Figure 1: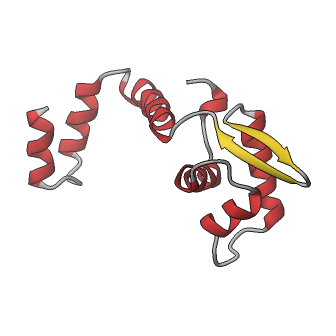
Figure 2 (figure 1 turned 90 degrees about the horizontal axis):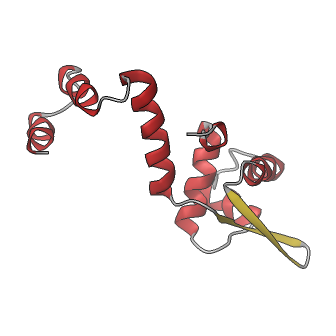
Figure 3 (figure 1 turned 135 degrees about the vertical axis):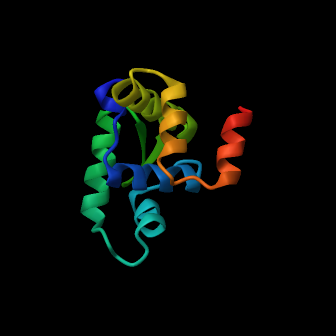
Length: 119
């Protein structure tokens, strides 16, 4: 995974809103969807979206005075990239080591463990 694919928590929130909104939302659309209680300022969301564009994860198109953004990668592509990086970095690329860790961590229910075993 390239460094440009790594997302900060706020970048994940904004990308999540863009994926959920579908199409090409504006900064205002993303702000209202991701932070309806005013948790972030318009300028903060705009800055993060500009960073995501520079990372190549968003494309911008201007209509009049308003910029509209669309993702260049799907949520699944980004999750796959993040997971590949995590597995590589933390488990030397070993999927069985990940499964073993999850099972031994105690955080999984018996039902979830059985699902993993069936895989």
